[in-house]
Length: 439
Image (cartoon, rainbow, N blue to C red):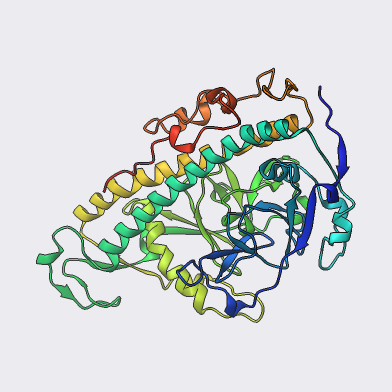
């Protein structure tokens, strides 16, 4: 086993805290005037009209509940004062040191109880490994191959989601469905709708279940019991919290269930992380069969977003049963319902399969990461080789094909066996077809 020397973090990085931006200096989404992503303590929080860093930069969040979380930015970004930028010294591989930071526990430099924080002074006390540059590059190439595959899957998910939303808007918001030219509009409680359509209450076409008040003192992060989904887990679509407390069958979540957070920002997701339990203030929506699951999800997005923007609480906004009961859906004839189901449901199945693939790739990368950094995967130390001399675990075959038989297998060998020339690693396009399913 190769042991790499440890050196003070200040010999590797120039540490620089980000700079605060006012809310009116940012936009929610990118545009021509505000093209630069702004990174906070937990990723992108908006877009600015100026940038601080042109290159990809490793960040360590330094304030709040996400203190110590590591991010690797896109190029051309602004960093808020809730993160510390780690700018590598000359002669170091920036991607490698992102993975080193990702594998580092920063809990020992966090101070403060009411408001956790990491100061540059405390962060400067950390020590990190410093292998030779050719080893840094090789390890970075191996690990970034997994990240590129994950990003490839993310791009395909975004394409499918954009296609699905575009279809829903055309057919169910603008009512430009096939043959719409011959169908006149009539008045309804939702405004003008095509003749022959109806308006239905959400409660008549879907079941809504509100979560169970599990005891938080019984929660654990060591994998004991069953995963439990809290509001904070909906945005990411995954959870690391477990409980051994029993629950009725109606509180059990499966892949494909629609979940909505009922406090704060009313985030939504179609769950794809396997069997779990539904905590309080998480709402589950299940179609009764007349409407497809993805169709139901898209139909809920606008009213949930409307409530999210209009409900005002003293401290935190709350979505309640009284709001959900008011949701109405434009209801087309059965022929169009069937047609849209035939288009949207395969898209949803592909999205769920891609999300599972991402989770499997991330799990494999995270298992491999500490083994590479600790030298447990031996390397030939000569500068012109720098190859692992024993195989690390590749993504399992079941991570791909068995969950998504109609999509191409992304990879069948460890990333370093795909490309041997120099320090390059395979591009995502070599592994998966990004052509979306036609509507």
